[in-house]
Length: 181
Image (cartoon, rainbow, N blue to C red; front, side, top):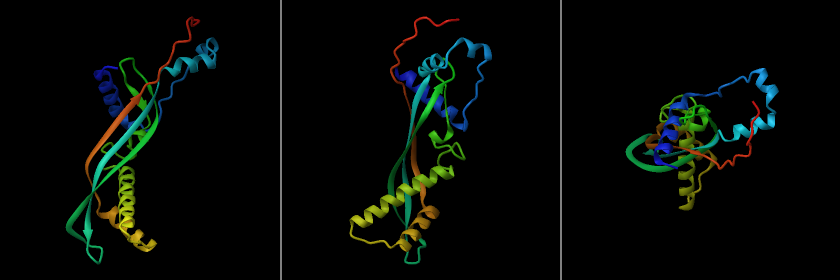
């Protein structure tokens, strides 16, 4: 596949990110009588794509003092989250419609301002920090974990984020040679 086509599909997905619900298209009654549901499904199979979104980011976490007040020291936690869903072509030149949540656009198009996306990124950072501390031999009580969770959600900052959107096209062999009109 040419790079220009991949770029066009990726840009189309980014432009369509604000769609949070599928577009409804009514098939006229005459068309429903002429084509079987199996034939419509087979024709539509070529228009369906798998949409995979990955966000790679760095979470900046300030080191707290003994009272859980942020200091000027900080450390960076690399994180990655992903989502998968389906989409479909709506134009012959490559525009694809998918749900907003597949692109991590729940409340805002800017993923660094989207509250749900922030939650998933911070949760990933929290898990990485807890794992690292446990690997170093520290035991975090549930109360300390709750305090750490609240601290990261309050003071953690998303830095250097990159959203990658991929449309995976499958091979569809044409099996319909004569479509009735």
